[in-house]
Amino acid sequence: MKRRVHGVEIQKAVLGLLQQRGVELEQIAEIVYAMQSPFYPDISMEACLSSVNAVLEKRELQHALLVGIELDRLAEQKRLS
Image (cartoon, rainbow, N blue to C red; front, side):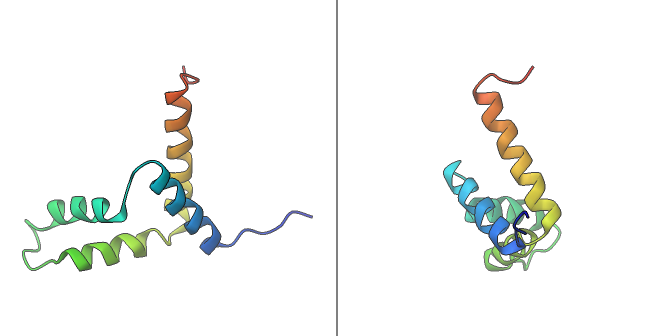
């Protein structure tokens, strides 16, 4: 029987893979801040980082990131058409 993988494990895997690729959550939060601050002038970096962490708990996003990271790896290996 296959072992069931829980969201927390997937989230840890995604965070690890992002880190391996050189992507820090603070960098993502900076992008969020840059895009949202024109609309929400009182937004803080802390709020953006909190939102990034909350979104990374979503299973759909975790799966999208896993697929994107794998596609990135394959592209680097020139294994995509």
